[in-house]
Length: 137
Image (tube, rainbow, N blue to C red; front, top):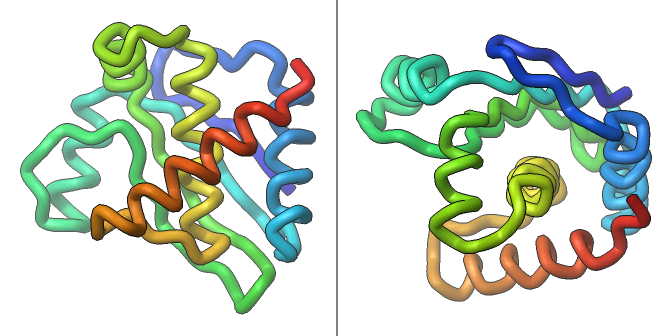
């Protein structure tokens, strides 16, 4: 089950379609959907999580806490709406495209994709692009 939670004044448009799209992504990656929580928050909120849990004193757009059991995906995906807005402007893409990108990015981590090396980052970006192109909303 995919759920959307808000720690800031933000609300997803087309939440049902996004949930279906994420579910299809999980299935296409030969994984099973467990409990996945998306938490939309501010830069300050996510920065504090980054400091407290990952010992990183930096801003970021997304942090995924993975509780998966094998191919059954479970976890919490925190997304800074502030950072997504800024990144959308910086990358000259729509907010909708950027928020969808970080949402699928988080779940792709649960599917086993990494982004620590340049090669891994290239594969991750390719997968993001692939699934973004498959949206029907």
